Image (cartoon, rainbow, N blue to C red; front, side):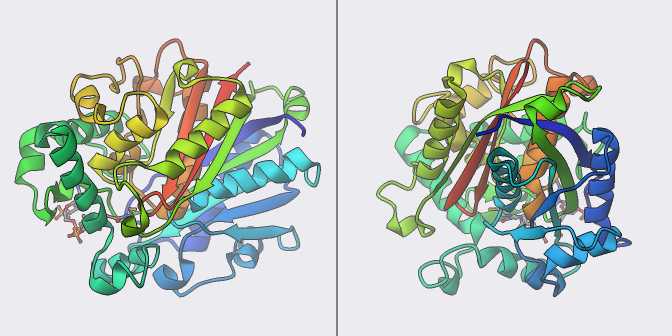
Length: 384
Ligand code: COA
């Protein structure tokens, strides 16, 4: 297998981008990425997108996006794994380069979610839940994560304040990120006063509905070393799936796909979680970040809430998590999220993160998951 490196990233500001179309924001991210990489070469393109059909009435993005960029004829494919579509698009681009099929593979993630009503967006998202056993009965993602939160509180004594500590920390980080959708600080009192969505999760425990795109360029490590910018080495990749329905799992507090994908990526990189300096993880709801900390092996099961409120995951903590602001503050355009996590990790490793820059880092981990962790993909990135 050929060694892999990231040589370019492209991000746009996320939010409600009503004046732009899906194809425009995807192309903007790709052009920024090409500029950053210092090349126009694209051997292949992978496109992470969960549901252009339901959000925009538009499928067949593999032709639409290259054509809009003036680059029709390049081989392109759309990759779907619910909210993990972006991370899976990066993994697929890595497979292209690792196998020798392509030398320059660009992965772009895009989702335009605000052109339909909130109810329609909730329906579109819920198609990634189990239709027969969950969505048909009216259970959508806030409801599924609320069940996990209740169970976590019941079994481990996780508190409302511990959930809020994730929100406060991520909004603080996001306030330092000019590309974030909600770049402002939030207090515990504001979380408590926000409307209840699904008990115990309130509006400010939830990631928002977002329009956004992001892109990364992958090539071989050998090729990357010829370029001026310092490349970021991709040393580990892990992917795993799990049953979609929570009712099919032995334990709804065990995110098995996250555990397995993390272990696979760490093994490939020849590392343990103790070697990782920071992580960007899939905090689609406050409880998700707490459970992911446990699934990564950063803390023991049941200790994620306390670790969060004790400051372990803050910018100056021992294991910073979501320096970008995470899905909570930066936004969650589902197909773009996994690609943007990698953009943040590269920005941090290059030392370009400005006010939210982490100190003394060499190795970062990104973790992106679909639905209630029915799929998960992990990348390990290093400066060499
Ligand atoms: N952080 C901060 N502010 C937020 C926010 C967030 N995450 N989400 C919404 N807001 C703000 C909005 O800007 C708006 O402010 P305004 O009234 O000043 O304009 C206000 O809160 C209400 O937002 P709105 O979008 O009208 O709320 P909604 O009731 O339609 O939707 C949720 C709120 C939580 C139901 C929706 O964002 C949601 O479903 N989130 C989860 C998405 C999801 O499941 N993703 C997949 C995960 S697996």
